[in-house]
Length: 446
Image (cartoon, one colour):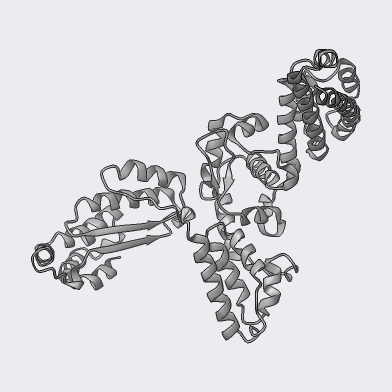
């Protein structure tokens, strides 16, 4: 930064040279001292300050602004890529201190992922400094910009690549790439770098990106994107099982067959048996990947649609590959607890058949639906001791089944016990479904 300042403000050269002669080890000193000696003091020198006042006078009186002494912009890109969070926060402290002490017109542009400690530092450090936060994901023109970028790069490939003459991506292909981008440029830039490889055919590589063709051995189409995702997951401090469950539930909710799932904070609290604060702390390390709404009834959403592709591919995500049986276990736990909140059904059925009460009809039908979903997710769930013990303690299981399970209970033989439970529950669901059909017929005649 000192070199760039010298190029922009040659007038401070004498002061910088004096600092280096006086202390040759200045670049090894504390960052705050470097900022003081090499940035703040040079800009507070009389000669530069005099030029600043001359500039202001020329602008106000003569409407002339010397180009060399216009307001300057210092860009700090990738603050989050510093390996040590303490260094990141220290740099923000130093910048905040410098902003209030430099007399010249100066602005800092800091680009970073919104890591939780960086957001906290901005909120606490820059209270007295005007700060404007810009979320690039909220740019309404982001998709248009990505489209222009893709079209320009595709045209370059057609013109410059030796196999690019027949490279003509369809409109549908472009739309799919834009959708996967999720208003972020890292995905399309990664795709372009992969497609334009000089020793491969662009059409074939585009098919790999779209999942039409499998990649060759040791071929990594999304290497840059994978490195970013892997860095974020490796830096996370949460329990792997809980993180796997949360992203697994988000993945299930993104599938059409599970459209009834809404990964809200309230849902995750019940499914994972965690407090909302614990879930928020778990997701603090993923604030650049997920949007956590303030309203606990609103679903958590992903900033990057391509993240789920990464997590579902063992070749790309390694140890962080989603184990959906863990997610199904959590969802099954949620539905089993949901059933506990419903009043005894035997009373409902009796009243419903004789009086056809609409509210009770609705309650019974909801219970049947919950039973069905519970059974479905249990069949796909990991047979964990925690889930089975909870089911055995739930009020909706009949005494006869509890006694049957107790007799056959073997902590090692989980699959056998779950098989027994499936047979029991399947029978119950059939009965409830039949009753719901009868109840629906009754209610339709009201």
